[in-house]
Length: 228
Image (tube, rainbow, N blue to C red):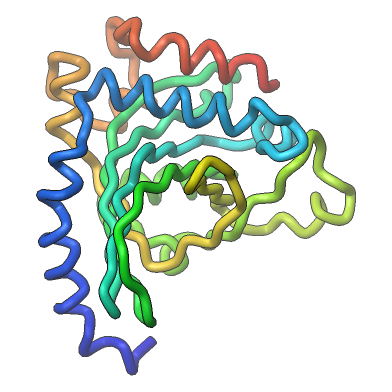
């Protein structure tokens, strides 16, 4: 990793250069929540290729990033907007969403531009807290691995699940487990205020007792309630 350190300024410059492209294809906060629901629903529409129910019933949270823009020419970068929902460990109810952005870079021969959907299943409370820290780096601050697929976890697979985040992606119409490394996660405070019409902090949304969750989020939360 050290030998790539000198390229980091170029990668970050590319990320920021990519931002206008992503913003032009960006979504309002309500559409972002709706798109996140559709991504998760479509991922699980084919159970044999979806997230195992055992994983969903035991995870601490889920981050969904619909339509992440990935681009590259030798150096690669990505930018996306998404949401995070968490499971209340006491009541087993789902709460949120709070809004996130993601960005990162990669090395190696690459060229082109594409839109990719990402789903990240967060397995423990430490992982959720890292997502909220505003400077989490997947693969550095959090262990991340390609997620298993299927109706149920095989016993051997279940015993080997040690990562804090299991990730899935969809490009060109199909989902697959993918290992995300070097991706940065940030809180989107402006989106939170636009959605809740109040400057709630992410911790207040996920762990506090806000008066009311906008109805646009209820479909996603209700859908997740079936996995228990």
